Image 1 (cartoon, helix red, strand yellow):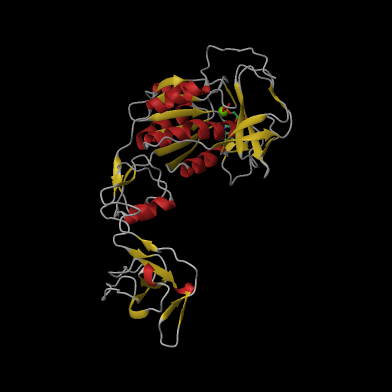
Image 2 (cartoon, protein in one colour):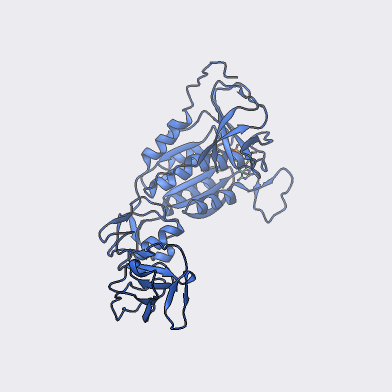
Length: 402
Ligand code: AMP
Ligand code: MG
């Protein structure tokens, strides 16, 4: 349904330009050493080098008998039992073996381990091999990691399996980037906190709590500064404090064209150099981004769906960039389950979809950026480009996962 028209609006920049702008503005935060057990989700600020070979010695991969492969056809005399962590006492010779445990050192002379499941003891307590053939069943010294080898690189986001690698390499206190401190301010005279029943013409503040959760999920440190009414002093006071105490401030609400949308002017007054104030995107057009001397500031639209999306696609990659990590969102191809007509627009549309087990993308019922529960079942988003009127059922679409 692409009719080949490119609309353009001078005030707006394309989303990819907005993303490059925020990423280019991000200055790496200082590194710090932390305990290994606290390092989940942190970004490595150094290449990690192993101080040992892994395994550090030839070791048995099985519980069984260490012997010479050439001898497995004959009954084997048992010399000793070798537990993990202990040194073998005797060399294995012709028609001999040592009972050995998984992880124990291979004795001199042995070149394989036969699994205990593939053996029986005869009347003379000698080991008889009962299978056709055997693997070597030895993990050789240094076959996984060599001493001096880089095992994890700077900018890696530490996941549970990386923690095992750090532990093995002796990195008890890895050097990681400091986490961004993120201040969150809600603006709007109509807002009350979730514990309250909203009085007439008011709504509950949902944005701030959603943003708080998104910041935590982005491995960063949120602080909530409450609701500022639509009054200059209230917003200004909170912004001033939040800028002082954080690396990044997220304001939500008050960035559109209303008479009480005061946020951009107050950002400017606080020394924030606004880099863009409108993105050719739906939802989230009035998203602002600026840089001050002590930090960064995003002015996000008030509607929770807009805020959610702009955090995910703009703020989150920025927070990781501050930590030295390039966030690569997971994408996949899916087949569109039904027609997705979209009004011709000078903005690209990000449409929430759920994915079926057979990989079909179902566009979610979504009637605008205030539709608070539109994202409940969302697995990801698909993008309808500027000038396109959407896609027909059966089209292969690119899904950006959440
Ligand atoms: P604004 O960007 O201030 O014009 O707000 C746009 C819409 O989002 C309005 O309907 C607001 O009531 C709503 N809104 C603003 N801030 C929040 C918030 N923190 N939580 C939920 N809705 C909000
Ligand atoms: Mg408002």
